[in-house]
Image (cartoon, rainbow, N blue to C red; front, side, top):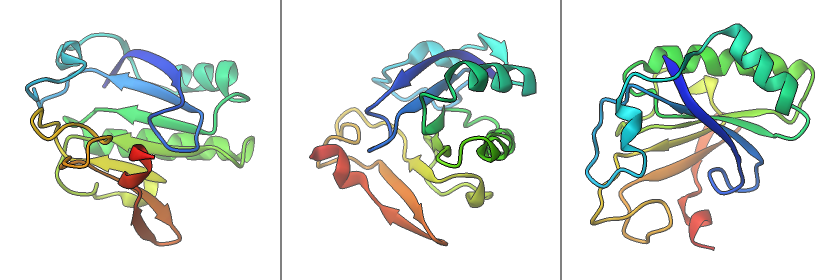
Length: 153
C-alpha cells in the first residue's frame, strides 16, 4: 500500500484536524471520482518510518489520521490504523478514520474511530448531499453512530 499524497484537512472528519493520507491503488474506479489518479500504483510505501515521520512532523497539530482509500487492502489499512493508535501514548486525542468505497464496515472495526463507507455515485453526490448513498460513522463506545448529517450543517 502506498501514500500518493497527504494533507492536513478540516472537512473530512467533523470536529477533527485530520492528517489525510491519500492511498493509491484504488480498485473502485467510481465515475466522477474527485481523485481518479489514486487508481494508479503511485507514491511512497506505507511503513513505520513513514507514519512515525508524519507523526513527528504533524502530531501536535492533528487529532485524527484518516486513511483515504486502500480498498484493495482493507486488512493492511486496519493494521496501519492500529499502529497509529499506538501513538496515542503520546497524544491521547489522536483518532483514526477510514474513507472507504466499500459498502460494509471493515472486519477489524476496532481499528477505527470513524468510518466512511459507500462508493461515490455521482448522481447521488458525496457526504454533503442529502441524497448520498455514502455514510459516515463515529464510534461511540462499542456502537457506531451515523454522523452523515454533520456534513450538511
